[in-house]
Image (cartoon, rainbow, N blue to C red; front, top):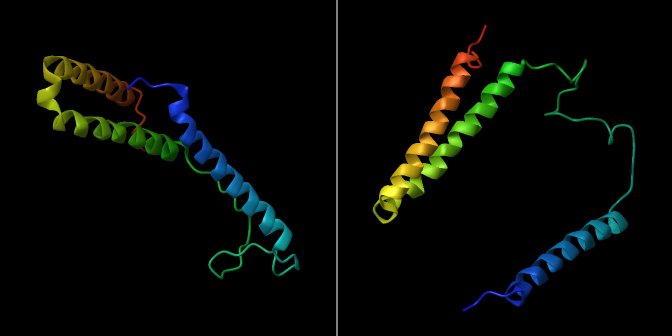
Length: 121
């Protein structure tokens, strides 16, 4: 069966209906929802404890770097599992591509170690 743009029409219709449903619900909640405002009701509320001071405490950049690097290197597991499951079907070409992928990740890991991105002071 040859794929044509008409084959994607049901998906497009579903996306249009989903977007229209979301827009309709947002519109109806703005129209029908209660609109009582007061100082106590509009105040910030966090676990029943009154907040004091500035909520924007600066975090160390190291925290964000470690978090981003964790996500980056954790994604490799997502690619390793399907490769391991289909190892025999992929053959030598699949092995070569995975070695290239892992080599690229290893180069990036050594670069991170060289730049001391994981060292906490």
